[in-house]
Length: 123
Image (cartoon, rainbow, N blue to C red; front, side, top):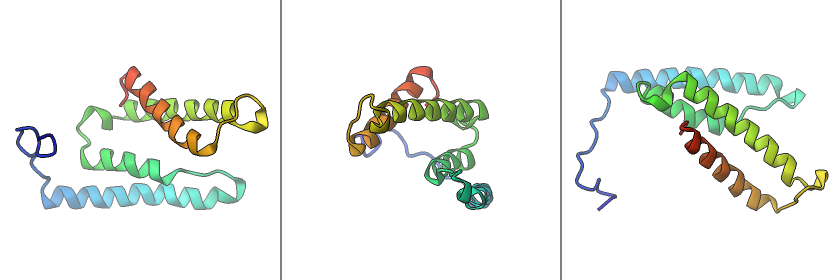
């Protein structure tokens, strides 16, 4: 039942013009991020393009929703970055604090970030 929308109507799709505009602006925005990524990789400065792709989907396809507003995006990324850095420090065996396998950390850290952002109202 839930897969079929639980009795709700399917949302109306965007017009071709809106879809084209979303596609072009998303491409240009991600092109800027990608060019910055490749111009700084020698110095070890890396952008996570997957994260920007997910945000680009929200910002450029449904810009009117609350989650696409600059405040939510900025604070959400700030919370995620701080959480990831703290957890990386805590679980990295080089620091000798609490070493756990990387594959567990790869699932644990995003789950924690989702929980924190949800609790703070930024997801």
